[in-house]
Structure formats: C-alpha cells, structure tokens
Image (cartoon, rainbow, N blue to C red):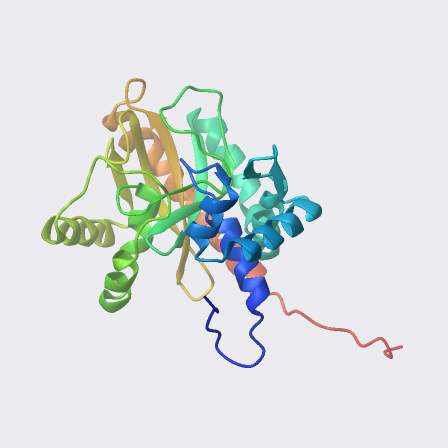
Length: 270
C-alpha cells in the first residue's frame, strides 16, 4: 500500500525502507521475504528490492532464505546519540557513579510508550535482561520510564501510554489506571522512581530525571542492580543520594552545553 506522507516532498521509498528495518524485533530477528513483506505491509517484489538494497548497503544479511539485520544498523542510533551530545556530557558522571556504587548505570529516553537506552556504563554482573545502547523496554514498569512519564502533562501521558510497546517484552507489573496514576503521582512528588522486579524477576533499580536548561525532563538516569544482591534499603539509602547528585550534575552540564551559542562563521569572513 502507498504510504501517506505530509506533503509533496515525502519520499515513499525511504519510508518503506525504514519500515522494513523496524519490523525486525525481539523474537523476529530472522525473517523470510514473505514474512518481511507481510509485517511491513508491502508487496513481495517491493520488499525484495528494499532488502537487496539494504543488503548492499550493509544493513541486512541473508543466508539465502532468512534475512536479518547487521550490527551496522546501530550506526543509525549511535548517530542520534552523538548528535545530542548527551553521551559526551554524561560519560564521566556515569563512570564516577558506577565506581561509587559498583552497579551498572544507564540513561534512557522515551520513545512512545517505551524507553530506549542511549548511554550506559555496565559492570560485569549477571542480570536477567541484557541491556545495551538501543535496547527497548516498556516505560511504565521501569524506573527510567516512570520519571519521564511522571513529567508529562495528562493529555500527553494518555496519548503516550495508548501506544503499543515495540519492545517484545511483557512486564510483570501491569497496573490498572488508578494504580498507575497513583504511582506516577508519587514519583512526581518525590522526584525519583523505584522499580522492584516490576519489569522482570530479579531486576531492581532507582532512577532520577535529567533536565535541560529550561527544566524540561529530557531523559532518565538510573542505578540498576540484581535483587538477590542489593536490598531496597541499600538502593535507597546509599545509591539514591549518589544518583540524585549525579543527575543534578549531568543536568547542569547539559544546560551549560545547551546555553553555548552556536555561531556559524561564513566562509567569506576574514
């Protein structure tokens, strides 16, 4: 089916190519041509041309039957991370936080009803879920998601939560609207969020919001631990104060970076 754009400059072929990339998700890492065409809503000849183009560009590989993405697709996400300057600002702060807590620490941003990890410093511990830059989880049962959802106005929050998750993961905690709203009110009031095995068994974390110079919440930063190793008391009494300090430091640095004038010098200046 033709894709409906917003104007005469809309490039349908580009839209179709991006849709083909996004049909590969957890549980569907390798797909036949027919499966890709069905998932993307494309005719098989169109899907085949797109897959062959992506293969030539290095974003897709095939064994002759199934197609799968290559690590080069991560370049698209890394380009976004680098363009924001967030990683450069956050890295030294995350590294210090990891050194003081001996736990993995991450930054994630909202994408619909999901969070997507954009920065991470990990420690070599066994946890129930693999996390790397680009990993996607449902936002509501995560501490990183809660601190960002709590900052949204009611209408925007409702629209965000109405979007289906694209993570492929079913969380343990699926609250009704009343329980969800009560949880987000509490997060909003205290300025940080806790999740205790709500996303998956054994995963416990605490998160704080990251803000830009105008005070707008732009991401979340967390300390993540294994529930069998770190108690809630340890997480809140020791890790949380360090996390809140780190979130403030990152937010301050990001605000300073954002405030620097971006001057474009003409090539004729002399």
